[in-house]
Length: 329
Image 1: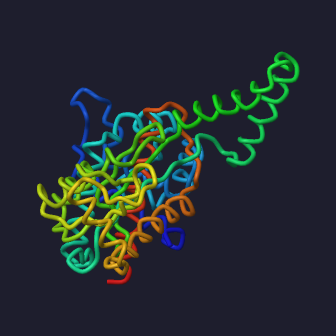
Image 2: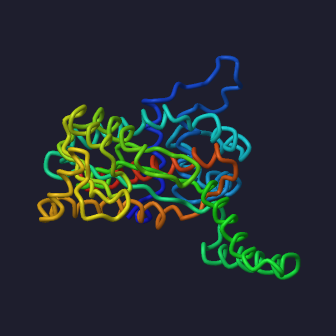
């Protein structure tokens, strides 16, 4: 969807949005060759195309009309863009820009959360540009060779080495959790972290941020978000109907002990929320859109920059949806 958009339109939309959030300069004593909104728009364009900093500099240098649209006489150096990536992409600023996109969609009456639910889901990105199958086979071959050469007398060493490598991979895997408006695929709240753990602790933060940006009637999530505390946060604190299958815990024929988890078990047994719970696939659609249009692997290497890159991907997705909405009028 996003790849059919004009990059020039995305650049201009990102610049107009950044003007509402960023000051002109971070310090009055800086060189002030470029403004912060201009650099932010260049970073969004880089993410939209999936380019390196050097290729982004070359693209902007070859597009003087794009530079003139955002008030630039020359393209920023790739080192300037690299430093801007680290300094501009703070979580609070990304949240403020998401506020602006959600406000525009709300004014256009496109969120429609009174009719369709808010959906929660998470996805993991690759830390480098190679497939998971190739990565897994490399670990297995390396572990097998190490077991044959050094620990051939220990039959369980090969499996233990593979499991240890898998644990290290999971602990360093970039993970992005999102709250999505199922009617228009707009991301209302986002949380980036390193390490593929349980989804349940992210439920409250995502729902609270989303409820500040729009009026929510129902929230839908998969079994990974199941917990009695999450149901109480939604139903008792925020007055939002929560639909989560009670799948956490050992398999048993007994009903869960918690009030709301027991209520969910009874409703799922008779498929009372089948139609509403089916909207959960819309968050998986957004995961697919992010990876299909912006790639499944991150360019950043350090955990801090990986978190910022995931936040920038979510913001770029929203800006592309905003451009599409403006095209359709």
